[in-house]
Image 1 (cartoon, rainbow, N blue to C red):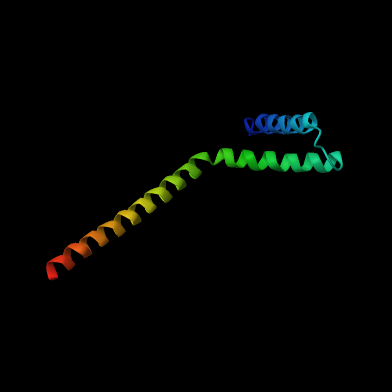
Image 2 (image 1 turned 180 degrees about the vertical axis):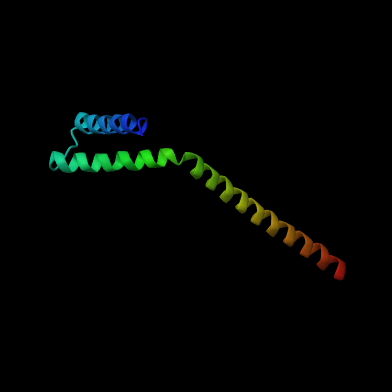
Length: 86
């Protein structure tokens, strides 16, 4: 908990500083602060799940690789068997 608070506050400060520096702040300051805080919370929750996201990507890639290898093997064996039957 103590590690999440400073990083969330830092992300909020950076986001608010970026918005103020570019002059793109529109609407009321309260709405902008709420949106920025929401984005900071979302970014923080995704940062905490980096390992899970990476593992999911690895499993997805491995599954796709297995599916492609299976399809290629099936195609090759089918042609091989078809050639023997003729």
